[in-house]
Amino acid sequence: MSEEAVQAATEAVETPAEPEDVSYQAVEKDGAVTAIWEMQGQKHLRTIDPRSNEGKQILALFETAA
Image 1 (cartoon, helix red, strand yellow):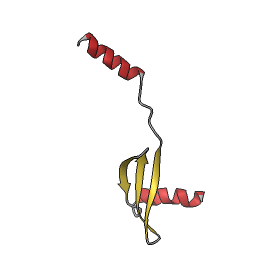
Image 2: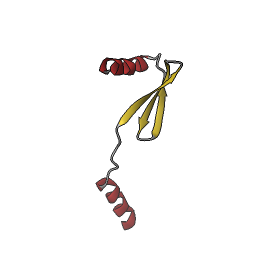
Image 3: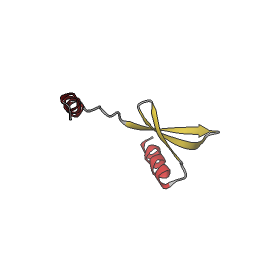
């Protein structure tokens, strides 16, 4: 391994990227939630079906908080 590669690897370890918080956005149509978007900053990570177990858990957390 060259010195440059070792230095680049060392710098990458010393300066980890700061992860942004994950947030959830409900997509509504005609007053019903049709999808839940998992977001990290402005990046869309995945879409969660609100009828799935995970979707129901997420919606329940937000309904009780309101």
